[in-house]
Length: 120
Length: 154
Image: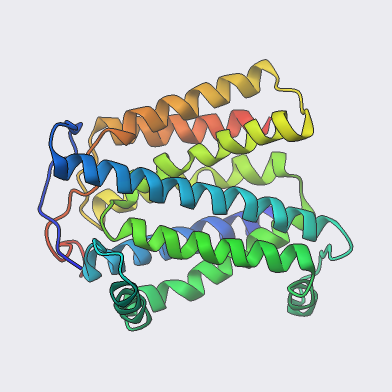
């Protein structure tokens, strides 16, 4: 049962992150920090279909993580969900078409291994 | 708001004002993302492992848990994490944000040592070193590498 929860944390979380990133690429960079610019930015988020589509996936992942943490230990939950780093980096390269060079691949893999070791 | 210019993900040179400004605002936002995430997770763990602890498939216990003070604090911090992460993603790639903000794991371990006097084993030190190395490899690449409007967005 706990592996079902792990899948419910990782897969919807990855989909939500990719949709969020796609939505923010579509919206453009926030480079002005006035109240008006922030309100326009927030208004844009509320009308961004990628962000809105990602919210249910993020919510499912969040509640699955709550359920996983209440049933298992951090020592299990953290390493089990660290695989999302590799999966999301692959999605960023192949779906979002980001230029993922060896620095980023190595960074993601080292971080994922490091998180597993921290949880042991 | 402005659109980004396509850039390779090769390491950046912090030699001009634009690069310096980008590096500073990316670092500040990443610190906010990491701080809200670390303290948010801590608050949620405190709330869910106490009286508000739940272990049911029914959604009602989770909805009731949302009214626990620690869980309220955790949810507010996670909302801050979500919004600050969206702002960061408006100019930085997902493949950049993921490893860089993972430094929060190291910060959490450091908080455990300093505030809770937790012991750090050799395996934990190895994990901290690997995460730090992974962040160092990523943080000096250009944050954004996709063309204006995000060519990847279908």
